[in-house]
Amino acid sequence: MSKKINIAIVGLGFGAEFIPIYQRHPNANMYAICQRNVEKLNQIGDAFGIEKRYSDYDELLKDPEIDAVHINSPIPNHAEQSLKALYAGKHVACTVPMATSVEDCMAIVKACKETGKKYMMMETVVYAREFLFVKELYEKGELGKVQFLKASHQQDMDGWPDYWPGLPPMHYATHCVGPVAGLLKLEAEYVSCFGSGTIREELAQIHNSPFAVESAHIKFKDSDLSAYVYRSLFDVARQYRESFEVYGSKKSFEWALIENEEHVIHTAKKPEHEIPEKVTVKDYAHLLPEGIQDFTTKGVYDLGENNHLSFTQGSGHGGSHPHLAHEFLTALVEDRDPFPNAVQSANWTSVGILAHESAMQGGKIIYLPDFHNA
Image 1 (cartoon, rainbow, N blue to C red):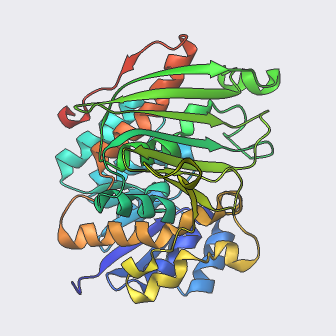
Image 2 (tube, rainbow, N blue to C red; image 1 turned 180 degrees about the vertical axis):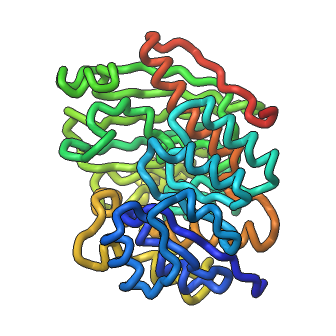
């Protein structure tokens, strides 16, 4: 397991967080960075001692020494950059979502099949400490039979730049779809979604998306389970919350209503007042190589001067970043599919895309394509 993967990071806002993780991982060589802004590129490169620097993504892909790219560019670039990298013979890790259309999701799955390269969508929630805690309960049998899953992602995105204003809530749904699908490795079969309320007219016009809240039911394939997920981005009073809840026959896990409060475990067949119990979710740094364990509790955005907004609002993404990097690297070293792989990533991303289509059609049931046959 001493093999080292030459990693290139593309996009150095949010992406800078991962540089020291790769630098200290036993299976990584933090080989190159890429950023269009040359001044920022050199600032980051100098700070972290990285010699190979590219301001042109296409030039980076011509470098034969690069084994894998980790893409942290703006959402509209994800699909195009992922496809270019796969066809250039590079493995791909990409921040969420995989793409902004079902067709592009299908194209990435197809590219993986044609090139034999690995793809991983870097979904933070399925490596956050709460998810790892519930996963441990499930694998130990403490939940009993899982009966229902639920998740939310509510955020006030007023003041965010570029493509965010007026975004349809479900177009960025992987943070709540990922955990409900990922716990039991389920595949969404069809979705029905309702819109509720309206956002300000100037925001609604941008994407022709009027809804303040979108709430979706997901039916899972070859399973008796369904899940409920809901999203809001504008004109809804709510503290930031990425919640994930699971209801089992023996125990259930419910997310705290207020940030930094304790979550709740409900245990069946106890006296009524003893059923709920507050629980402190432990950190899972012990699952990681020693050199990157402390990154579950700290970040390095913008060299310590300014926290990236997604990190501040997202409570550090549940300590997930080193777990994500570790999964990607070990999958490449072991020559196995990472979790989530291309098919799973396409399924999760397309749930949100098609949920919004459903909401625009009054809750119409929409089936997901079979990405296995890309």
